[in-house]
Image (cartoon, rainbow, N blue to C red; front, side, top):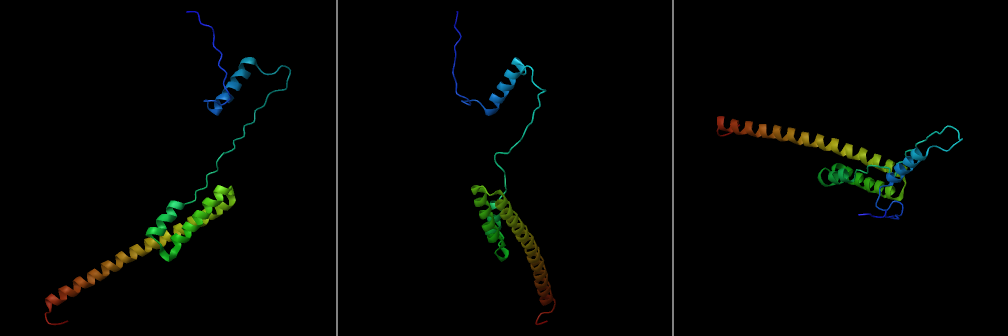
Length: 146
């Protein structure tokens, strides 16, 4: 069962994660040692995000447009959200953040106004139902008029 070693040639990154090559290079440096006669080695790590995440609030704006569209704030927020998404696709991060901030502000105001309107409608409903119940009970107590 004598087998000769097999050599497999692979292209870089073929089926391997990117960080594997970095680990492999660090391992080679550790095994081979640092270059002889050089100055002390310093390491600098720069973390650069590949994809900058800018929330565009499209779902929130769509919800406000469909369910809570007080003074068309939800629709306007939806328009700014779409503009933010367009700016992000083009690569204009500053513009995307500005439009997203405006959409977020409009969504917050739409939510606040609609919460106030909902609470107001419930209070008015309770007041009118109490007035109707009082009028009915008064009619029962005094038949023939008020």
